[in-house]
Image (cartoon, rainbow, N blue to C red; front, side):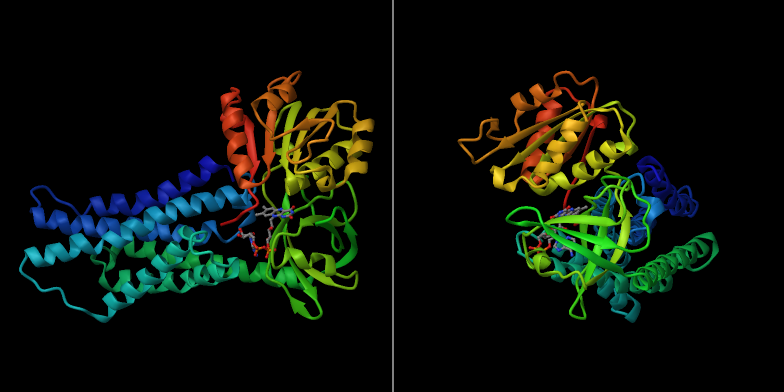
Length: 426
Ligand SMILES: Cc1cc2nc3c(=O)[nH]c(=O)nc-3n(C[C@H](O)[C@H](O)[C@H](O)COP(=O)(O)OP(=O)(O)OC[C@H]3O[C@@H](n4cnc5c(N)ncnc54)[C@H](O)[C@@H]3O)c2cc1C
């Protein structure tokens, strides 16, 4: 699905209750009724935005295919915060209406149910926003976020019992359609989990690439994917199943099996080196839209930082195997040459593909004979030299991505020709 199509569907879902709500207003309505209607509208729109969070985060492939999971999660974050704000403030006009009409608002069970739902959403959203500040572990954040699956049904019950717009008519039917879709999303998640568990992959090889990067090769049922896409893997080692982790496929679809190349950065990745060929894995793939095959352009500029090389390795392997004649420049920033993975293979591809130019940039190796320092405007201008309206692909550490994105815009590359993959799904 294209991003504009998704946003269009979301807009229609929001427009339905707004139109039906507008139909309940009448000319000459007293000010208090307007205040009350405002509260109802905030609740309706807020609930639908929150409902969409479940659809957007359910990893439904036909929705994410052309958008990419990280961008989809970006929409999830923004629309979730907007929806939550609406829901948070909707009691204000409703309570004010009661007070101004001389009624003392009572505390009832449906109101408590709504408050519990709201509390869970607020805790979930706060943990996402304050993730870095609170130094939360990813697993802790995920557990908190998963509680939202309980919050939505609670909100649904609350709105159905208390929402005057939902007591009968088209809006009530619409609400039940939302409930049905929610159950369909849950069923889809369960079905995918069962499918993945039915066909575990075998670890076929464990290869050390550098001092901190290891490649795992997997054998199993064939997976159709584009070079540059990623998978979500759970390793089964010593009878224990790990948390699911996303990794770009460094392998190419032109070759047999799947491979990921993992840099040791934390609890899980530092254990990759201990994986054995007897181990197995549950693999959910493919995801993402970070592939030159999704863009139509003869010239390409690839910019990688550190382990951000993996999608480019996949794409270059694919190009070399398919004998594709594209003008490609790869700019790859590392600290020092000991961080360069796949060096021999990359040189072999460069020798085979005269249309490929590889520029290594070392930030902490004063005696490096090539480019030194960071990937900056000067180096990028040199890389762009000779490329005609290239599509630019960028993948690296967050700080580098931010700086390079700004630099590329400064160099006059239009936004629509810059594509990036963040190694973060929050
Ligand atoms: C689309 C995508 C592609 C990626 N491709 C690669 C790759 O090719 N090679 C590579 O080395 N790394 C890749 N990563 C990053 C990799 O997923 C994380 O480094 C890894 O999950 C960290 O786990 P940890 O427990 O070792 O580290 P931690 O120290 O626990 O986490 C470090 C950071 O990694 C992220 N993270 C941790 N656990 C998870 C999880 N279960 N699911 C999602 N994110 C998590 C969080 O942002 C966390 O802050 C990719 C990430 C994404 C989103």
